[in-house]
Amino acid sequence: MIGKSISSAVLALWAASAVLVVTPAQAATTSAAVLKHYAELAHAKYEDALRTAQALDKAIDALLAKPSDETLKAARAAWIAARVPYQQTEVYRFGNPIVDDWEGKVNAWPLDEGLIDYVDASYGTESDENSLYTANVIANPKIKISGKTLDTTKITPKVLRSLNEAGEIEANVATGYHAIEFLLWGQDLHGTGPGAGERPYTDYDKANCTHGNCDRRAAYLKTATDLLVSDLKDMVKAWAPNGKASQHVEADGKKGLTAILTGMGSLSYGELAGERMKLGLLLHDPEEEHDCFSDNTYASHLNDAIGIKSAYTGEYTRVDGTKLTGPSLSELVVAKDPALDTEMKGKLDTTLLAMNAMADRAQKVEAYDQMIGDGNAEGNAVVQKAIDGLIDQSKTIERVITSLDLGAVKLEGSDSLDNPDAVFK
Image (cartoon, rainbow, N blue to C red; front, top):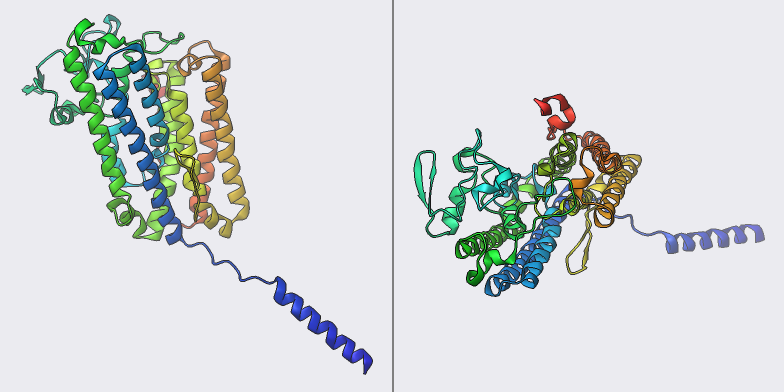
């Protein structure tokens, strides 16, 4: 009798303990929740890109109102700051048609800068591929495009829009970050030696004008910056709740997840590892670096890599320091294959480690265009390690696609990686 009552007491205690320690199981992360947060992060990133572009616009107003070394330096610093959040949005390319259709207006490269302004004699005077190679819109109130005359007397948004990819030539870039970059820095004439573009502030000083047409140059710079702000406003609106881009990516779970992974994989492999990094390394050509006028390429590549990781983890640190988190692709992969999730995050971190090492070298030892120079074995190796990380993480991205049963997903390729001999033909 005594034994039975003791057993009953013990059982009662166990039952009470169980009530105390058991918590409700967390609901499984859904693809709908992941896609909603993916859209929320896009909205936040484009908002940050817009705000920093607006700060750039104000800095350019100050430069044009009172040209000086100080105001030019401040405008350049504002441009560099504006690149940080924008580059972290690039992972939204490739998988999202609305972004792809828009991107060429803001970040097209490389550009034939002779279309826009004066260039050094070493640039040459003509190109078999581009009749507008040295059109110099700033110096000429009328230019011919495919046999038709375009009146550029007033440099307006409409004029610049009509010049973008004029004659169906991709190198005719008249708007966006890189057109503005060229107008702030000018050509980098140092090759793979130290130094970036050295445009003087007097190119905007109407009273002491260098290289002529300072009023038109100022009009071009202001118009291009206003267009950048306007274009970014469009993308902020598109990714707002119920915006076209948000609605599109959230409409179908499978297609939405495919969009995330297409952006991650295509940016990792074909675009960043291939076209932006390996091509320049193969050719040892500073003209193939992304931010070639400012020597800011290392930062652009690093922020692309940060953006790729963000698309997987659902984490983003805003310009003001606010940290955003939410349902992530990582959580979906954990539910399917925890080891694969660990592998994916590990490879993303390995790439970022290599990118940060490259950025550290760029700030302490030599610029990116020097790193890719011929005969610079140590610099080449630093860049190659970042490329290797991007290629390796792309392979795991493909495994994630398979794990989530998304079917066949086409990622961007690059001759630089897939057929390097073709690069030299």
